[in-house]
Image (cartoon, rainbow, N blue to C red; front, side):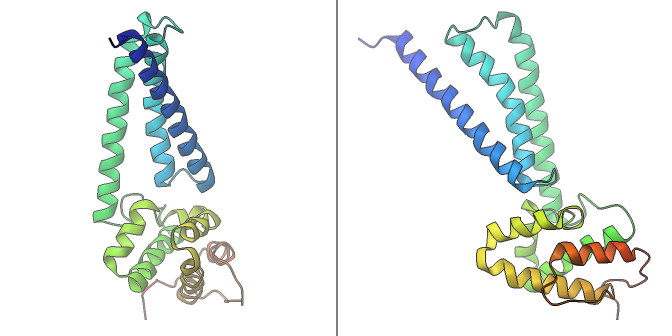
Length: 206
């Protein structure tokens, strides 16, 4: 005869281990991107909310803590996690339908850089593929964290990221009339563009 209490304990222990494992994976993934605008960080936030609701419940089931006074709060946290998830999905779907528009950079040169990055991706990869990339990596990340953006492209496209980034640097320097030096990386290029700041060159013009 199956011992229901033992089965429940084993199941909840396994659940607890999985929760901690998933949280650890998402924490490492979010930390590696080094930006708050990444898909990984958004997943981390959602998981963190869910984590705060599930762990006390599991520990209570295992008899390790008394969470009787936590029940109402736990339901509120669950509700909050659902709101976060809905908002996360809505923003990502919107950014997929209108890449580069959901998380616009501030007006001025930063917005022009983000739009230029989006246009370069579309020109090289096609609109559909560029939208897929923008779904996971907001083009505005290239403005505020070009090194992190380059790393994310590298992890996604491996060896194919190098030529893409070099082309991106070349195009950005050309569009914003910034001197293009051999071996210039995306971070240096964008720093030069932002330093110039008052450039009147409009990406795509001419």
